[in-house]
Length: 242
Figure 1 (cartoon, rainbow, N blue to C red):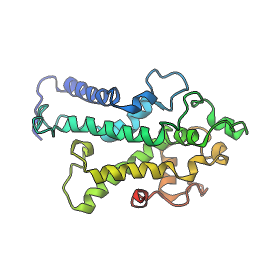
Figure 2 (tube, rainbow, N blue to C red):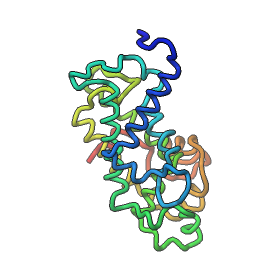
Figure 3 (cartoon, helix red, strand yellow):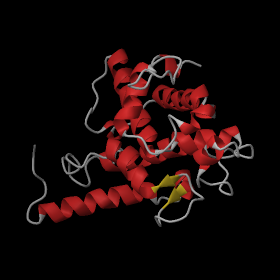
C-alpha cells in the first residue's frame, strides 16, 4: 500500500475518520439524523449516536483503509471513494428512515420502559409499528442485521461475477438492483412477526442482550437455550424476495 500521508499520520487519520463519520451523520440530506440522540439523554428518539457508530458506521467506514487513496483520487470523475461512501451511506440511512421510522415511530411514545409496560400488560397504547421500530434499532439487534447487509452486498457481486472492494463496500458505486435489494431486505426484516410479538417482552426482549444472543437467533431461528424466536434463520436470498 502506498503511504500518501507522512508526518503526523496518526492525527491526520483520526481527523479524516471523524470527518467522514460526521459528514455522513450530520448531513442535512440524512433523514436518519432526526431520529438520533446526540446528547446521550432523553427517551424520545430510537437511536443513540453511540449505537449508530457501533453498528452502521463501524461496519461500513473502514478505519484501516481510509488513507489508502489520495484525498482527491478520481474526484473529477465523480468516483472519489470517500465521497461515494458518504453519499451512499446517507442513501442507506434514508432507506432505513423511510421504511422503519417515518410514519411509524412516535417520538411522543419514545423508548422509556417499552418492554416493561408490555410485560406488565400496560402496553395497549403502543402501536405495533412503533414497537417494531423500537426493537429493530436496539443496539444488539441492529448490530446483527447490519452484518446481513454486508453479506447481501458481497453475495450480489459474487452472483454477477464482478470484482469489488470488499474492505470498503460503499466506496464503489452500487448498482440500482443492489439498492433495490437492500430496500427489500429492510422491508422484509421489518415485516418479520417477531418484532410485534408482545409475549416476548419479558423474555427475549427483556433487558439488554448481548450481540452473540441475537447472532444465534438470526443464524438458527432460536436462542441458545432452544427457544424458537424466528420461523426460520435469516437468509439473505429469501430476504430480497418481493
